[in-house]
Amino acid sequence: MTSLVPPSRIPATPLSTRDTPRAIAQSNAMPRRRLPLMRRYDVSFLTDQGQMETNQHTAPATPLFESAFSAIARGTLIQTATGPMAIEDIWPGDKIETKEFGPLPALWIGSMNIVPDAPVNRPESAQMTRVMADTFGMGRPMSDLLAGPGARFLHRPAALRELPGGGLVFSPASDFADGDSVIQITPQRPVQVFHICLARHATIQAAGMDAESYHPGKNVAAATGPNMLQLFLSLFPHVECIEDFGPMSHPRGSVEALNSLSAA
Image 1: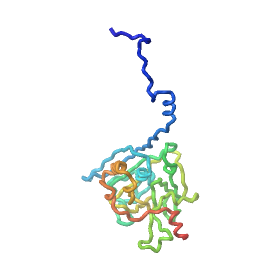
Image 2 (image 1 turned 90 degrees about the vertical axis):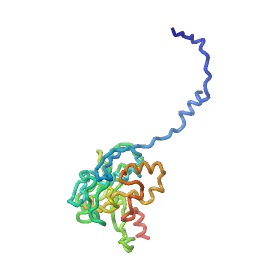
Image 3 (image 1 turned 60 degrees about the vertical axis):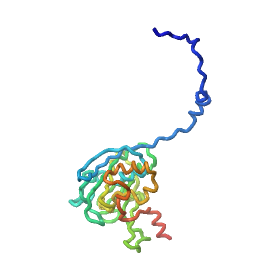
Image 4 (image 1 turned 45 degrees about the vertical axis):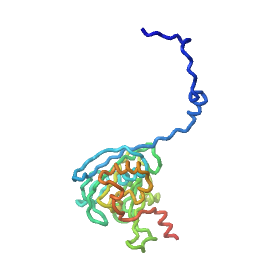
């Protein structure tokens, strides 16, 4: 039989200094570390044996990760070697027409969802850019184009036209917003967005617009800690290091900065 000790016989246990009302109040008042927002990313890629595989990842909802998945909205027509094809119907191994190198195989396709009212680290990561048909000339774009926050368009700033190669630059789609034919919108329902990584960095045709295939950029390794870089690269099973993405076909720059050069 278990004997019970009367409450009066239980020895008093002194309060730890951490358990005093004052200490508890101070602990509750201390700012707590904010957990990073996470997001689901979907990936399709070609293995070394030429087989297609798909998987899902949960990773930080930061610009480094989101920009790799958020360029082209579902339904956008991409020019392939066999004709226009909706982005969601393209598979790794399909050949995509490029401005610089002709048809190149898609090695990796990533996608994610932009969800209205979902928590975000930056408001702009929940916004998209709508480009009205023929804004930049006949068939550019061929129909209204919805670009994600990771999209970049190729253009030739006036200040760079005399440079070798014609001064072509990739700039964020959002930089072209004018409140008229190119506008920033917050979608009212979830939108699936995609990005494509080719055998090498190039310009592809998205609804008739010159858009950038995915490349993480030249300085991402220097600007990212080793653990985060390793996590980032795990989303790209077709590469082992940043250098495997190869050279960039054109530099990047913001429209505002390039326009300031023109005005100088």
